[in-house]
Amino acid sequence: MYTSYFGFKENPFSLTPDPNYIYFSRHHQEAFDHLLYGINERKGFVVITGGIGTGKTTLCRALLGTLDPSIKTALVFNAYISDTELLETINQEFGIETPPALASRKGYIDSLNDFLLETFSNGGNAVLLIDEAQNLSPTVLEQIRMLSNLETEKEKLLQIILVGQSELRNLLSAPSLKQLDERIMVRFDLKPLDKEDIRGYVEHRLVVAGGKGDVKFTKGALDAIYEYSQGNPRRINGVCDRALLISYSKDEFNISRQTVQKAIKEIRGTLPIEPAPTVPLHKKPVSLYFLLFLLIIAAAFAGWIYREPISAIILPGEKVTVEKAVSASRTASEPKAKGASIYLDDQTSLASLFRLFGEEDSNDTNAADTTHLGLFSFSARPEHYRLFKKPFRLRITGSESPSEAGSDAALPSSESRYLVIRKITPQGAIVIDTEGKERPVGNEFILKQWTGDVSWVYPYENKNTILLKGMRGDDVLILQQALTDVGYPVEQTGIYGEQTFEQVMKFQNDFRLLTDGVCGIRTRGLLYQISDIAHFS
Image (tube, rainbow, N blue to C red; front, top):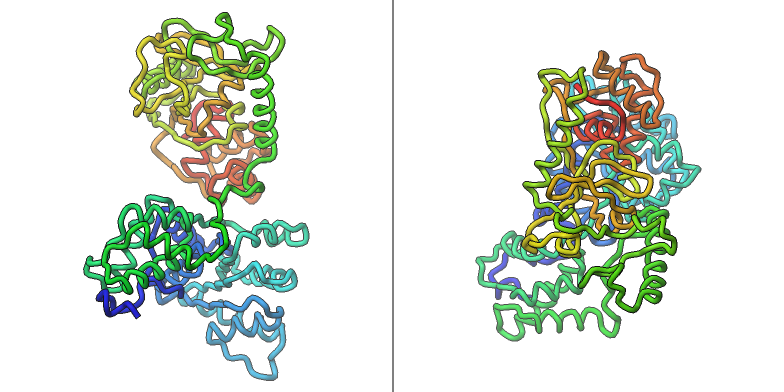
């Protein structure tokens, strides 16, 4: 109705999954990269999950439009089918003709296998994409697993992409589907758009629809769209479509916050606006929830007991920290330092980090002259830091001013601040202050400051940066030693065989790295930090 009035060629906010309108946010670009990686590297199984309306189908259609013509594709959109119907549908999508006399499960599989072998021999690849996969029955999923057995001695003939809602993760984790779940080499959970993506998303769709820049959504309107949609593309499309209709009736080209709010009210009716989505419980370690629960209870108890200011315990203006009732546990609270601060700026923290590495590396007589030093950054869960064996720095929350840790001159509030941690202790850690002196802090203090953003110095030689299955040599032997050292035992053969491959994948999965069985810079950098290995090649 309003398309010609605003000068559009078509409706910019249609709810159909048109790949021409895909907006590559950070999350969508990562998902797209995972899909391409799984296909090009012939990983066999790829799983993409995400909430309703997050753009999974649009993303997959955009992917299929970019694949090389040598890659054959089959799309299955109806997940409510039997295992035999699945095989028949796959063959139809690939254009495989199966004679009526061979119209059976075995006949379909034999025909598919012949097609895949021919495609492979011609240098091609084959992709099976199943949408709404959360609706597949266990019997059909088992049949899909069996299709992954169609392979040569070295390559998977069929790349299978399962796309579904978040329930698909729970379905695949069922004990009965363990064999299938363990074959999935690439996974990605698609998140909604970030708030800063909203303007780009809306303007992108207006331009693709043929807009000339006449239609404008104000900042207030965009804020209201995010508050309602929480970054869900389908909701964004719905409210923008209604807002344009309202603006058309009012002869307005500037869409205001009031117009968007009216559109939301018309869409929602009397239903309340849903709150911002939280991370599902299964995505966070249960131990972390339990720890946070204990910290909240302890903090409330301490707040009651120490409700009166006690100058001997708390410095002026300092927030109350959790302390145990016995004097032996005083290191669990924030240290009451005088003079130097334990909160360092970027330059000072880096200098301290490299100085600490130099002190420890000077004792290593095996260090090669060709060793290079790099700064390795990693996002770590709070329970992982106690595994660290080398000095590292932690970017902190910034909830307290540096003066609370003894600094007379606070850093600018906009500047990042860090803790440089020399080593982990049973009670907490030893940190380095601005004067280069060691200071003890408690575990609770570290957890209070934890952001997960950690970095450390990583020594390496500029060769063989990636170790793959089938490789052999001293580099592989060092990898095997490191894996065994951190609790992933493998035979020390110097050959990157199946056992090493499986243990690397297990290590990657446990530490939330890309689970591909390839030992690249991130896998090696983390192994260096938590093992006793002094250097990687």
